[in-house]
View 1 (cartoon, rainbow, N blue to C red):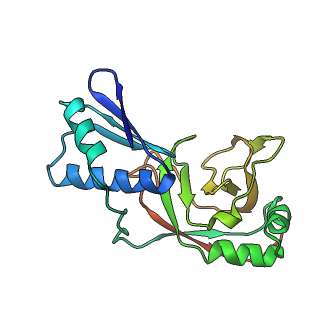
View 2 (cartoon, rainbow, N blue to C red):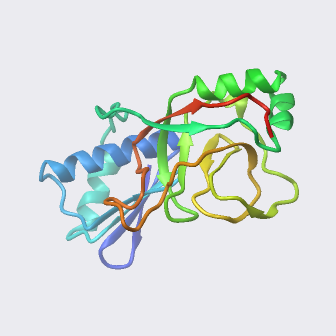
Length: 208
């Protein structure tokens, strides 16, 4: 673990893996909730956690780098269920990469409980982990200029749902009508770091 200063009152904590980043984020959120940490923002990413608005960054940096961080606890709240039609144009390619049929690929994905590791890219977009590393898939060699909103996609170790139409190079395996970002809702984002997520199949697998 490395603690890098960012300006006068922020730290960027660099860790070894995504799991370590999730665990550190959960521990820092716990400390803030219990009044043990005064910080304005805690922002997790793939292998870093940014802390902004610290009164004594140096002291906290020394404390964090000298301590063991416990594993991230499971969230008590129920998992968010996202209905999905496994009808994406890249489902067959992903299934072939996994060495299974498209129906089996959909079953594997739907049987997995995911966790939001961090958010970014677009408002409402969560990077979901949970699939074993043998199911990692590469991004497309040529990104699409427009991916439809509601596309359920895979890239590397992550699953994500495009909250709005945008360019993208992830492998598209399904679609959902679930609204990931709604500025009239509180909170606007359906997903937040640490949220548990399950995909619930609807309709026939491969029905495009």
